[in-house]
Image (cartoon, rainbow, N blue to C red; front, side, top):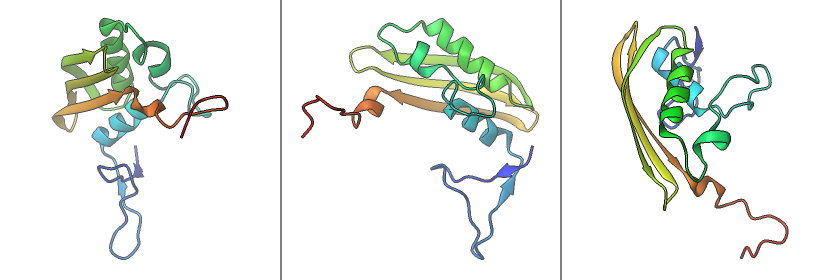
Length: 131
């Protein structure tokens, strides 16, 4: 599947001449799928990881998190297997580190991701005592 090539930071990878680069990277496709929140993309509302519903909660089910991430990664064409998934969850800090190996038709690579409750730090709303 042809896609716009992204930098490691998630920006479009634009060449020196200002051209947008294209890629067929399975690794990039997996990263994009794991960044989608369930229901976020209007053209495929059933795609994405249910982060708010089952991952970023007080007492997450680690087995369920592993299954959901594996299922999402395996939905990408060219992904053959997910191996060695480890979830390190810190309930007090509401933070998780997840690492796993992805076997693809392009080869095998290690993926690591961090989830942090800090995504809500800027969410002060009416009635909050925000500075």
